[in-house]
Length: 609
Image (tube, rainbow, N blue to C red; front, side, top):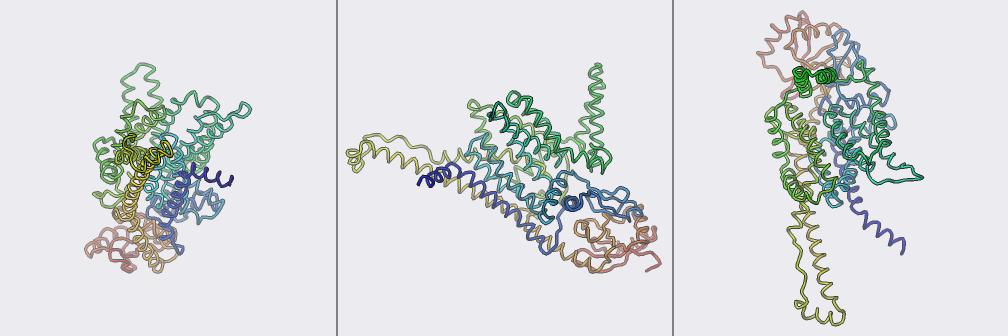
């Protein structure tokens, strides 16, 4: 009985965590089912170039320890043979991306097998759900933490980009959550052993390490992550102290070190990466910041203003457009997820009303969240992304939804607060029962058991209120789950159900192309590089550029070269053969119509037709 009683007490105290673990397990299987269904039978293809590159190089690194693929024919073709999100330098194909996901997933592949790659992001995202609960619980309390976590487990972008598992963004957010939780423990109460704060030192090491992994996963996010960490440190200056700060920074540097090593090997400098624009921006920022300090110290305010404008132009490389940012925020939060946005707004107002009851952690959360949201809103909102071919389409597959994941997740506790307050208001507390109201059987019970009847009645009403509040919250969460998951599956043309259908079409196209082309063939295409690579060499291009056409003409002396794109109308076909390609000594010959819209053509020399 004693053991059973202890188990009962433990379950009573830990049931919320057990519920969160159960939800996270369900989340993992739900998110993993997309890749399980679309990649059966050895067909491992991805719906975007970024995913293709991350998968290819993660697998390569895990199996060989290398991070470049040599393509000898690029020495002839002047480095034009490669898919999107790959770069080619002197015949070596390299990632045009942040290396963090490749190093992390590649390391895990080296310990196990490459077959786990499609399921790593769902697994880490599920773990992120558990740590999100632990983190929010410490800031806003266990009830808010539990509801916020249930909201996260069904939140469309988090679920969608966990299923689309070779993007960086969910991995970045999960690592960020790990780092924040251990950072919170680091700044918490001391766990001393023989005057040594060993536990907090361990928390400092884990926090720094996970923040370091987050940085190498999406280095561009340092724009807001570095100042946010600085703010957190300033608010916890005394709690963290010197020793834990050194341990934190040492672990952070340890996590970053492999990327510095590989940047040197791949791109010639520890601070260079796969994005040429970002490399140039880093160089400009370093140079401009130095000039700004010197000019300010010398009192040259005119030159200082020039440097500030230069720094602003470098940071906002794609422009600074506040009105567009607000418009994009409307499309990708207010309009796309109203069932979460408006409760978050009202919950935020309720939170502000209780300002006199705030603790320090609430103030810090609000300051950091406001800072992060402002930077993300205007930084990414100023860009124009057209991941969807239709620029008028606002879908979950457009980049804003993954770049703004920190904004979405930070708003969930306010949505949770609104749900808590709303359900309490639906069932207000009942007034205390006056003794004269007790009649009949209650009077008899009170005569036998003094005050028992009144106590039982009050306790019953309290339990009944608690029951109805819990049921109403469960109903609201089920409704949100239904809306959110429906949106992920069917909410736009990029919903997962439609993506599954597109993958089936891609499988058919690949099988047909493999039948019709030689094993060493090169295929020029605009959108299907992610489908044909690596089974066939690919070039992302058209026939508009005369210089590219000359390079194609060189390649057909060594390899069979094909063109796969929309079926050409007769007028365009004749124009290409009669003028555009003829100037390069080329012509195209139809091979076969593959689908209703796409056809395969072969490039040949003029005299071969």
